[in-house]
Length: 325
Ligand code: TXA
Ligand code: MG
Image 1 (cartoon, helix red, strand yellow):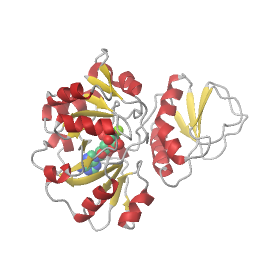
Image 2 (cartoon, rainbow, N blue to C red; image 1 turned 90 degrees about the vertical axis):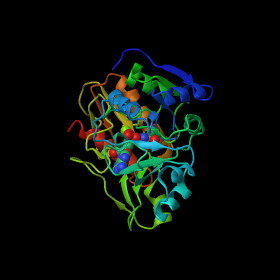
Image 3 (tube, helix red, strand yellow; image 1 turned 180 degrees about the vertical axis):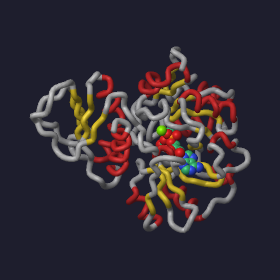
Image 4 (cartoon, protein in one colour; image 1 turned 45 degrees about the horizontal axis):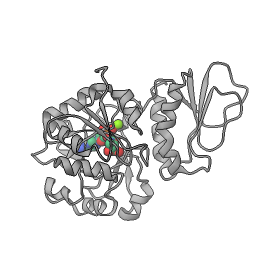
């Protein structure tokens, strides 16, 4: 990775500039409603190769392609199964990624050779304006080094990727704070491949019961589903009940859902003082980035309630903790 810094531009006024960087094969990090994405022209295999290089991402981990508008889906891939179209209709723009057949115009590097591709329309005005101005689908994984914490602020991108990215559009903190939900709705019963910002309950209101199939190793169905992922640099331990207050020395940080923990902690982050899961999801990665920076020896985390977007939050926490098992 380069030690240079990228050009950081305001998300609004920087769009024309950033779009021309995309058109000429460069990398642009941009805000979405979920996390910041590291974008390249999805129709340009060399540009897409730079994404894998910048992230040190294994080539078996396929990317999500972003469109400016739901109407662009048929233009790109042709007709899609009715159940897929219905979900796009209901939830786009929004934090839902759908699996479709990869059209020949999209180079195989985008999908790591898979015959299918992941696609979504982000619910962020700057992101959509950027994609529209570039005039191409934009392949974009989260704008972090592979396996590390996802970025919810432009600063996270600059710190994590440095000059490996050409331009960072700064649109402030992202609204959802957690990645999109990935669904394969091509078959009889939709399959959730990654829990994310769109709760399973909301999906099921449209589709009826879904199957949740989260891979964990080997050739993962959605490698965001690798057992160890989303990890801070500091060892992280997930606890199931309250930590005994009398615990043990060292510099330790605590990531709480609603209530400040008892006892002596070097640093504490509370995700949502009102116990709101949406707010907790929005703050999750930011709070982990902050605890990581305090230089504590260990981060202790408690799970959040396992409902709605809380399921995706707990999924990220388990994977982060698995790195340190
Ligand atoms: O919210 C998000 O989805 C963010 C923003 C930037 O849009 N992007 C994101 O990308 O989280 P990334 O690369 O960190 O995660 C993409 C996930 C990976 O786990 C990948 O395996 C899965 O999407 N994926 C991509 N193509 C797939 C396919 N054809 N079948 C199954 N999973 C796929
Ligand atoms: Mg990611």
